[in-house]
Amino acid sequence: MGSYNRLLKNNIAWAANTVARDPEFFTRLSEIQSPEFLWIGCSDSRVPANEITGTDPGEIFVHRNIANMVVHTDLNLLSVLQYAVEMLHVKHIIVCGHYGCGGVKAAMSNDSLGIINKWLRNIKDVRRLHRDELDALPDENKRFDRLVELNVIEQVMDLSKTSIVQRAWKERGGPDLHGWVYSLADGIIHPTCEIKAGAEIDPIYRFDGL
Image 1: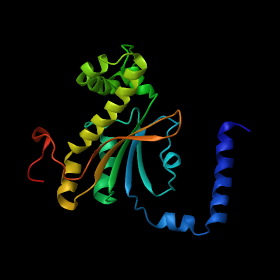
Image 2: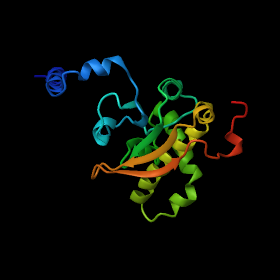
Image 3: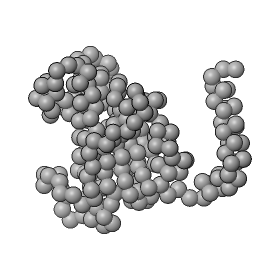
Image 4: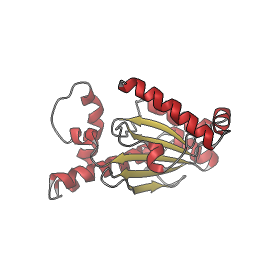
């Protein structure tokens, strides 16, 4: 059986097993979507949001891209963010990166990789902002791990700079913002930063009149 057909067969088995455990599961799932969490994660196939957090379908609203970026010109990301914040009223937004991220690794090099260069440039900006800290680390692996962490922290900060988040903070006192890094080596999530709803941000990025 080809890999494509194997996926379809696995789906049928999963659906049957789910109904056997909980006959009303799909009825409930189809009627409402009310997740508490928006997950902005990496596209890496080894970091699936539901599996590593032990959550069921319907509990996490998910957006994934290369290296879990919050890019202010990315209409896909902004559309997901607006829907999650303004329509689903999520209570928490999680940016989850992971050690061993290929996108971050590529941004540490000077290789030209085609159109992805334009995306990786955003990570290179993080690298430039933290150049002194990174250059002071003793070896390449430690610099790699630290850039993964710093990238997550910067993306969480970028969330706080959006009018979408700032408006929600003013109108309903949420959501809180969280930065996590997942370890492929042992499956453990490491919190790196948190910004509570309504926290003070640099006045340069604050929108008045929201």
